Image 1 (spheres, rainbow, N blue to C red):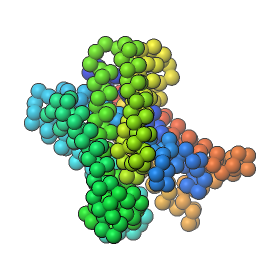
Image 2 (cartoon, one colour):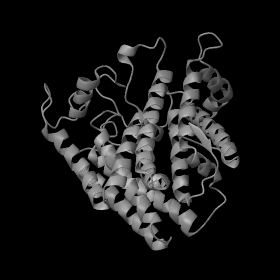
Image 3 (cartoon, helix red, strand yellow):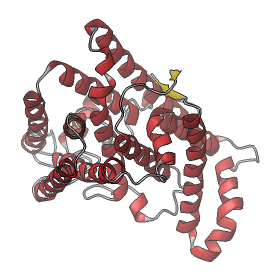
Image 4 (tube, rainbow, N blue to C red):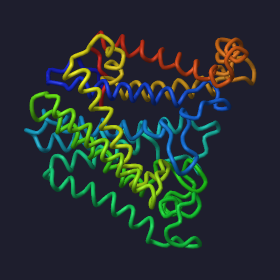
Length: 374
């Protein structure tokens, strides 16, 4: 990893803020004071359906897609250098994901059931795929790839039979994506029967990232106007509507990253990005965005370090058998907030305080022009 000073290329500030809001949301939903008391919007849907928390990861893939063509622009003069950069970055992201899995796995670390997929691993695969597509193919081809990924995934999930279950079964035990994960990865999964970042479900996730490419290109290729923002908002609403209609025959499911979920979440992401663009780049209402801008300029550091610290606090027991995180939560939040407002409120307050901690840390880096990248 390397730190660099402020970039000289033109940046779309609304995209940085959108990404920063997403990173803050990822930290918020990943680090409650206790998993025993969490408000439902801050939890993932159990299987079918969705909650606001289920939108966070696709928002990050969407933001990455929007930024990839511009992040690679300065390397386009050297094709070999560009390929080296993309492959190197993908491998480092994948390796960091494995490292986070190791940090989050309770000791002793057993390699026989060590989880291989993960959030950063999926980001790495989607990043390499998007980089290759945006640099080697036309926009029309990219649209065709995204459409084929969504329709093809729907077809194989509904038509290809799974041994012992049949075709079109979308239960945790009987779906095709989970069957392939078990066949190829064995016990190296997050759950017994499936992994939310599994192999086959990464295909529609690539389409999510490509939707971000289309949105970023739309906002950047011409001058900033309210009409372009309105068009992106309309496209986002239309995509979300398509996802809701598709849900009737192919349920919205984040664990399987169903095609309906992919297009629905991309639509919501486009609408939120359009709102950020209208506020920041069209109306230029500023003064509130700096903390989120700081997160958006250092997303990798914000996500990886916050997850690593939370895992350390959860596993470190300096006061006997009680984890340090539990001690902090009980003494600083639960002791007074639970009697007053309930256990869920106390758990949320801890999460908000943890987000604020990382906002301050990343704001310090931002003001010092330190941006950590790979």
